[in-house]
Length: 123
Image (tube, rainbow, N blue to C red; front, side, top):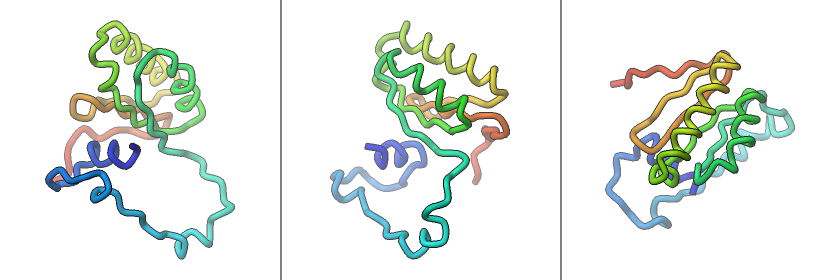
């Protein structure tokens, strides 16, 4: 599911195929040897917002300095849930001096302090 979400966000440029054809595992083991035990300072976390019960964990991730890519399509049908979630995320972004932006109409990216979202597409 994360691969599908990233494909939607980043855009594959391909016509729709079956899920098995879209997914291709990359063997990066030869590149990972040098830093396999090294902890990362920042993670990109993928989430799907289906209700407000996930909000405490999403907030915690941003406060911990991680970047969130959130599929909000499951909550778009419930305007109150969607509006409340976005309001809460904006408050967290304000607290940490981060950034938040909608990508297309069903994805939100939230960043912590020191990471800004460039709203101009590269062409």
